[in-house]
Length: 388
View 1 (cartoon, rainbow, N blue to C red):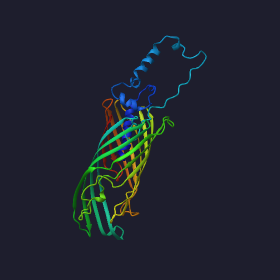
View 2: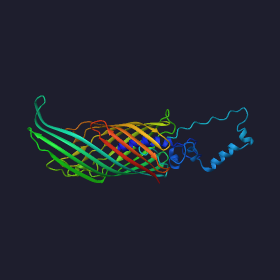
View 3: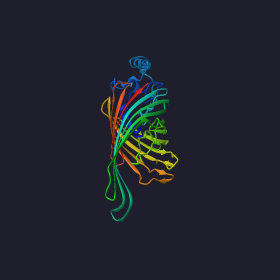
View 4: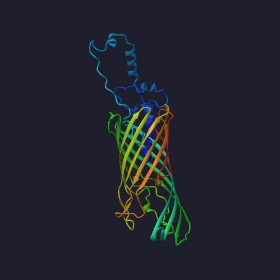
């Protein structure tokens, strides 16, 4: 779920920058993308977007001031006295976050539905034995070819607690399949085994908070703090029976079996028509004791770094390109690293685009391609956010 949260940012950033109001926010209105997302996505030209967030009364007053010929409009300041300098307002980007691309306004609800598909293939070689000469092994070699397909439908709720603080809840439904071809070789002979398993059900629910840290950029940059917690309510692999012949699970889990917490920091630098962004996260997994022969298991912690840029193509379409690098540390059992495990490097290139259908509806399509051996081959997500 982490990649899905991180890479949606680029598409939303540039999509919202494209329709950014050009005028000054109305009096009493919080500056930012909150109003621009609701009032005018694709029904107005860029020139008129700035007026869309101005109340009719204020626009009328502004028009009257422009056409007035009275003394007050001709000489608004005393002769010989310079008018006061206007304060420079920061770019209207304070509502961007890692997942939805905006912070939901106070009291508003955003519901997002995401369809996600992940495909991964891997070849695993397990060696058990000892060598008497270089490249000569006495013992057992087990070669496995594994194919995994994961389908998820994630319903996400965002609620604006304040204009700078947002709550999030993710509820996933998971269906996954796994096919394994194993060819154990012992003394030069072996039998090819083929197994296939599947599983479906409610996945691990996530919940979190997003907070905007600044309204005036540090050199033009804006920062957001995020924290995501993950429960262990999905079916975990340690409660699923194991096939005695293959040593594999008889069904596929829908959850990990562990609680986790993921703090992260997002940096955003807008330079119309491009928005640069980066996100750094640390994923801490809590240990769990499953008793019996399993004991205390820690799945290993992880670090995640992503960065990229979003490009505006026109007032309705944007394109995103970026890179994500996750480092996953080896798991331990009863405080000892599990044999045949190592540090995993998951690197992926991310491409995507977004399109504004109307002022209230738009969609995003992301494609991630693994560039390291440990990363999934491909990950596709289609997201549809809606305001309520």
